Structure formats: C-alpha cells, structure tokens
Amino acid sequence: MPVKRGRTDRVSVYLDGSRAFDLACVIADGAGLRVGDRLTADEQRRLLELDAPHRARDRALRWLALRDRSSHEVADRLRVAGFDAQVVSETVAWLSGLDYLNDARFAAAYVSVKLKSGWGRRRIAAELALKGVDRALIDAALDKADVAAQDSMEGFETVLALARRRFEKQFAEDPKGATRRLAGYLSRRGYDWDTIHAIARLLGEKAGGDGGSTSS
Image (cartoon, rainbow, N blue to C red):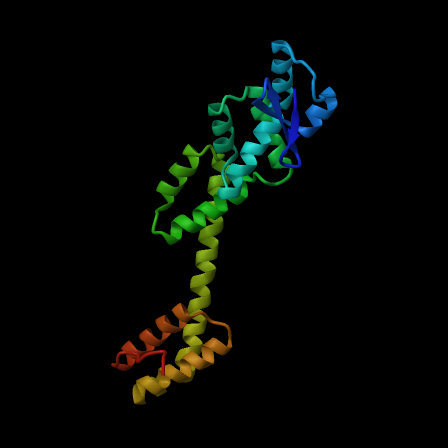
C-alpha cells in the first residue's frame, strides 16, 4: 500500500497499484500508515469515517471561495454530497466559529446587491428565507438598508442645497460653465460623479437649460 503526499494537508492511498482514496495527513499519520501495509475493508471504512469531517471542511471551503453562502446553503450541499448529520452540523459550526459563515453578513450583502438591482423588499426577504436565513436577520438587514438609503437621501438634499446657494444664479447665466465649476467644486470634496450629474441636471432644469455636461 503506497502512500503519496500531494497537497500538504492530504495524502493519496493506493491499493494494488491504483489510487483508492485520499486522507487528511493527520488521519494517515494517526493511523501510522506505511508503504506495504495491508488494509482490510473494515479498516478502510474506518479511515474514511475518520476523514469525513476533513473532507466536509475542504468541500465547504472550496464552495465559499467562489462566493459567500448562508449556513443553510452550505449544510444542504454537504448533505447532498453524502455527509451525515453530525459531520454537517460540526462543519457548519467550525466554519461559523472562524467567521467563514456569517448569516448576518450574508444577508446584509445580499440585500445591498439586490436593492441596487431593483428588487423589492418582499422578494428579497422571500429569497433569503429560501436560503435558510433567520427572519430576524433578514429584517435587520432590510432595516439597515432603509436607514442607509434615508441617510443617503438626506446627504443628497444637503449637498443640493449647498449647490443651489453657490451655483443657481450661475446656471441661469451660463449653464455649461456653471456645470464645469460645480463638477470641480463637488469632486474636490469627494462626491461621486452620479451625484454630481444629478445635481447639475436639477440645477440646469430649474434654470431652463439642460444642465450642460460635466466634461470640458
């Protein structure tokens, strides 16, 4: 029975010249496996049982490397992959302890992305519920997004009022020149181009012009 190390954390076990299965190094070392050892079917089964938590962690980490997922999603995929309930539960707990799984963070990110895509609260909540996220976490994520949106709107109203005081008369006299000056003024203060365009358009419309362009 040759034992070959590939990845640093796992080894491949060959039986009768063919690769039979992989094991976590800690399992192989703990079993004292050596080249030439003979393994009965029961011993092979026992080694694979001991290795199951390591395989489950490895799979889950590969899934999470692609994108963030809810705890329920990971548990479901592990069950479908054939892992028993105890291994699934222990794996989810291990991932959560390392903060690789965090349903509150997952819900907040999901809400942010879907709101920007035009989804409504009801649809977002329903989809998160299907992903097994707790209702309290869903509500908290949606409420936080509402507060952020309100803060953003209040911030926009503040900068719009500032722009009106400083540039409204200029827009009435020279819309294009006023747009360039407004863009420079706001960009130096860290406002993004979407905000600048929106404010320029509003001031231009009020002045009876088209608001010009933010490019020279």
